[in-house]
Amino acid sequence: MLEIKNVSKTFNPGTINEKHALTNLSLSLSDGDFVTVIGGNGAGKSTLLNAVAGVWPVDSGAILIDGEDVTGMPEYKRAKYIGRVFQDPMMGTAPNMQIEENLALALRRGKKRGLKWGVTNAEREAYREKLAALGLGLEDRLTAKVGLLSGGQRQALTLLMASLQTPKLLLLDEHTAALDPGTAKKVLELSDKIISDNKLTALMITHNMTDAIRHGNRLIMMDRGRIVLDISGEEKSRLTKADLLERFAEKAGVQEETDSVLLS
Image (cartoon, rainbow, N blue to C red; front, side, top):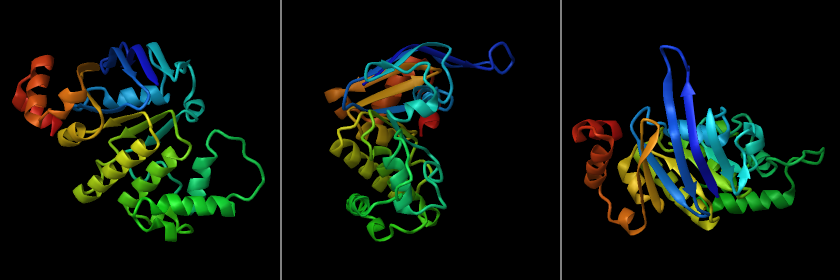
């Protein structure tokens, strides 16, 4: 479903601020894979997601989604393939519009717009049913402005919006980092449910090692623009935080204590 071939990206090339964010990176995700991505600050995690989403062009290499080469495709054209949830709960929604209006926009992503009513009665009932499944009481607040919702409610809504059209790829960019632990746990549980129910292929960045181990069927760890660990299946199910730190220290050639601080 996603194939990244030898992708490199350097920011500010030829200057004192030159930064090699991705270095000849290759990664393949099969249909239905849920991959968690972990690594220290500056490892290249967000650069990887932004490269896939088309936020900026890569210097070299190729990116394919479901067999189609999207390397030269601008971000707005890739939107029909990709759903994305950001770290900031304020992103991904229109705060001054109603919940049902935001859902209607998400439903029409990539489609031609006409002059018909924005939300039909049939759609409204479908939205109510999907919101009820979140268990947050939002099904009774369809006309509430999204800006009035809590961070957790907003992230849950954004998750629903991102999966409404069953994207080929769901990108979760540290989408629980700005939430309190209890709310973050609830949003992660909803993420698991939405990915499982819709059989989505997903890539999730996190700084939390426990979350990286607990969620998804595969874990990759990045360091200095490269993938240094790729763990899946039975091996991942037996993984502990101590194992992860030890293996990263071995692969990246750094002290375990330093890495513990980076990844905590």
